[in-house]
Structures are given as C-alpha cells and as structure tokens.
Length: 395
Image 1 (tube, rainbow, N blue to C red):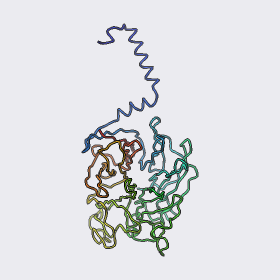
Image 2: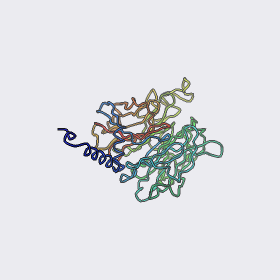
Image 3: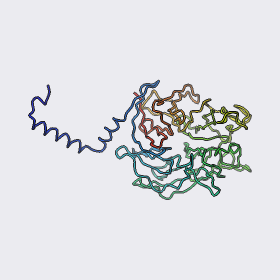
Image 4: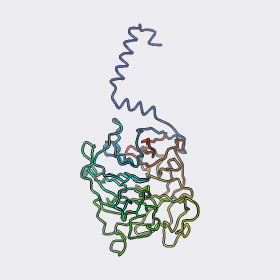
C-alpha cells in the first residue's frame, strides 16, 4: 500500500516540510555518519572484504598518528610542521599550537608522535622531527609537551634528545618512537644517507636509541661506560628506520628500515647488536651496482634480518594486530608501503613470518602510517598532498 494514495496534496506538502526540518535539525554525528557512508569502499582480500571508510581528507603529507584515551580523537602529524586533532563528531581541528619549528627540506619535517605511558596523568605528547643545525645540515630531534585540557595546544615543549652530529642534507631522518613495557623510550633513527656512520659508535646516525622518558640514559644500556661510544645507543648498523612497534605477545621492540634499491628489512633489535648496514645488505645502489662498502648479503659480526624484500616496497609504519574484533587478522603485522602503494599484511607464527598479502593496491595511494585503534579497527594515513585518514574493517 502506498501512503501517498491516501493523502491529499496539502498533507503531502506538510510531510515534506517536516522531513526537511528534521534533516536540518539532525545532529552533526548523523551528518558525519551519512558522509562516511558515502565514502565507504570494499576491496577483496584473503580474509574477506576489507571495508575502507574515509574519515578525513585534506591532510598535508600526514606522517603519524596517536589515539587519545577515552575516545577523545586521534592526533595526526603533518610533515610541513602542523599537529591536528581528528574527532568523530567534529572532523579535523585547526593546527594545535606549541609545536616546535621543524626543518622541512626533502624528507625532513614533523615526523612521529607517541603518548607517554602515563598520559592520563602527565598529558605528555612526544614528537620526533627534523631540526636544522648551525652547519646548514639537520638531524632528528625528540621532545615532549603537555596537551592542554581543551586539546588546542602543547604547553612547555622540552627537547630530550638530539641526533648528533647533524649530518643530513634532507634525507634519512627515520624515525619512530616506541615505549616498551618498562616505560623506556626507543627512538629509531636513519643514517642521514651517510652510510659509514651506521657503524660509528661515536655518532647517532643509523642507531636505535633507548632512553628514560625524560631523556636520561639508562645505566644498563649496552655501551654505557665504553670509551668512544654514545651511551644512548641500543643497537646499530641500521639504514633508514621508518617503522617501529612493540610486539604485544613478547614485549620485544620490532623495527623496519628502507634498504637502498632492494633490501628493505625487519629486525628485532637486541642490545649491543650490529644489524649490518652498509656491510651487509640485500640491496644495490639506486643507479645500479653493489654498495661499495658491502661484503655481501651477510657479514661476520652482524645480525641477519628477520625478514627482507629483494624488491623494495619502501616500507613505513608498523602495527601488530592483537584485537578481538577481527579474529581473521589475529597474529598479523601490518606495514605501510610508499613505493608499492599498498598495505602489507604479514602472518606471524611466533617470530616467524609465514605469509605476505598486499592490500588496497587498487587505491594507488602511498601509505605512510598504520595503527590499530582501541576499537579494534585498523587506521591508515596516506602520504599525499591531499592526505587521508582511513579506517579499515573486515567482513
């Protein structure tokens, strides 16, 4: 039965006016939900349909994200030097003030973000970024500020770490920030494209660094008290680390790094160990030919990678999936790919990677960061001038 057949025209007109008024009155969350529905897409995968919802667009080269507790939103860094807040009912905020000045040449800019383990009490937000030096070169710097109660500014920003010496002309800054279960802060660094420095223990290029949250050096770091070595160093022989995460099942810090042309790799860095660059690599020069310093794919006294790619996807971002929401993704490791323009899903059996799947390649978007949200969904940032925040589910 059609209602319109039993109503006169004035009554139909009144119903239309009421419907329009109801839509105009509808809360922002309803408007947001209808907009999200219009930007939802599905893609095939080995585990079912991956449902992708575009939560935000118009980000400028977004680099990293961190989830505020109690569903208060997601903090997002943009490489040109801005920090934004995305909230479900409000969208993207204006830039948050109090962010330090950053060096923005080439790969430089505002990079990673992490909340202090005691954020609910301290309100500390940690940032890594490229910082200019007096010699016209730059290095990676880390500091923290306190997020204001209204989430509009960082107060009292304090630098706790500087990569020294500053050697970068705009490339290979890294970097990722990882807190372990004991509350130590790990900083994954690049070697500024100064290859030999990765092996130099008196420099902080190509190193994984371990610090107390206030920047102090732990007494049990492996090079404390060794002449000619920086006490901040945890491991060395890394190239350009752009992914890092804490394994939720073992408590180990995992990092990954770009190789040159080929040789992207994943490591589980151990105290005092040498991970090979540039002495051991599965990559070659971008122009072709072997890396001059390389002794082969292995070298005595160095650790082999846990996993590597002969052809570089140009990996960035890393997240372990341990949520209950999508059992089909359990024991997966998600990694973004810039050059390959995909989201890589690796299947884990303990510390062994048993399978690899590429997702979202149909979108042709560089993926810079990936995180698992407190809701069990997977969140992704695309590295574009018109960057996006995406939410991924499975059905």
